[in-house]
Length: 93
Ligand SMILES: [Zn+2]
Image (cartoon, rainbow, N blue to C red; front, side, top):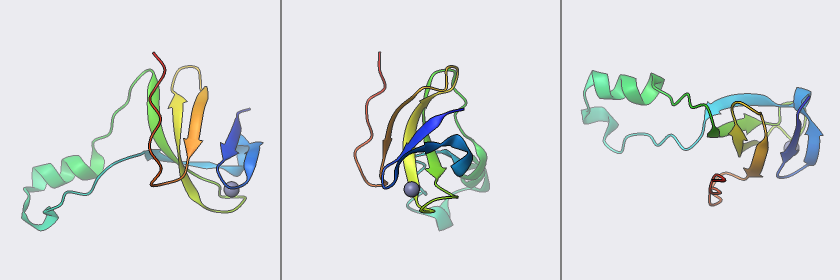
């Protein structure tokens, strides 16, 4: 089981959290005037790396707040968790 550190509550069991997918997806600035294909890419296309990945997580059974995490998809190591709007950490080399 993973131990995930909520930025507000501290370390808690993985069972209290829900993953919300890739983090740092920016809505197109001119969304009403882009093609359907570009909008579909924004909505549905996500990275699927084997390695470090920025993800959104929700502390569903705790404070219910969203935050971001830098997690390795193969080892599940969580290098950092941080509040939305905080500067994202660099992945280790
Ligand atoms: Zn929390």
